Structure formats: C-alpha cells, structure tokens
Image (cartoon, rainbow, N blue to C red; front, top):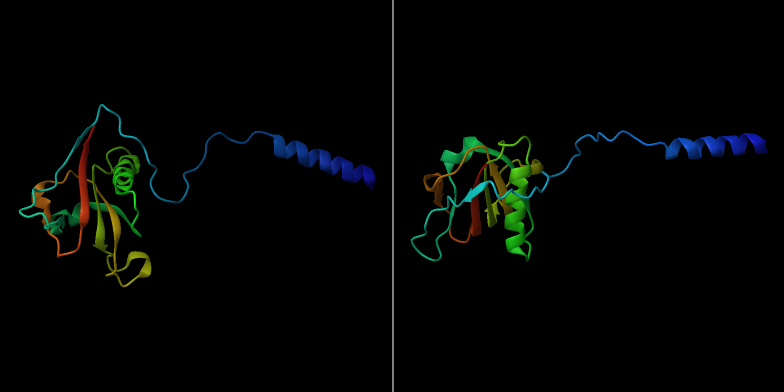
Length: 155
C-alpha cells in the first residue's frame, strides 16, 4: 500500500511538472490593452464646441460602424482611462477591426446591455470600425458625454 502511494505521488509530481503547450487560446474578457506604435497616426475627430458646456456624442451616422462597447462606473484617473480605451481599440480583434474610439463619462447605457433596460448614465468606451469625422457627432443632451475623448488610429 505504501509503495503504491509513493509510486502514485511520484507519477503525479512528474506529470504536473511537464511543460504545457506554449500556444494559449484567447481568453474571455475585454480587449487587450496594446500600446500604439509611434508609426501610427492618432488624430482627433471631435468637433469644436460652440460653448464650453456643449459636448458631443457619436450620432446615428456612426451607429452602423459601432463594434465593441463597454460601460462601467466612473474612475478618478480620467486620462489613463481615456488612453486605455484607445489602446484597447488598437488591441481589439485583428488589426483594423477598430480604428476609432470614443470615451466619455455620463453616457446612457443602451437598451439590452447585459440584459438591462438601459438608460442609466455611466462611463463608456465605444469602438468603431471606420474613422470618425466631426460630422458623425451630434450635440449631447445637457450633462451627458462629459469629459469626452475621441481618437482615430491610422497605421
């Protein structure tokens, strides 16, 4: 009995120490955060506001280009979250699947998001599969789309 236990323990130790495949399957979760190379141009398509309190959000003309989107509670480090949204756009899917990102606080959650009825205002990161232009934006309702950040990536 002791010999069988020792043999089993030795084989179990050996089998767990063997190397595994170096190819890992993609995991669930948000898109990878991938730094944008300096060889890529990052441009700002956001329109110039006519007043300091006016903000914009992507309008209906951009709906058919919208891909991945995420909504989450507000963070205190806005600059880092804006950059993370853009770098996640760059890391999303195959290169070129996301070429424009929009990030803002106080965006209405869309109907059906994770089974919700939509409506609450949250921080959002939206990806688009084509470059956005100023004409793709519409004036946001007062108090919505605050601290907006929009960028196109061209590599």
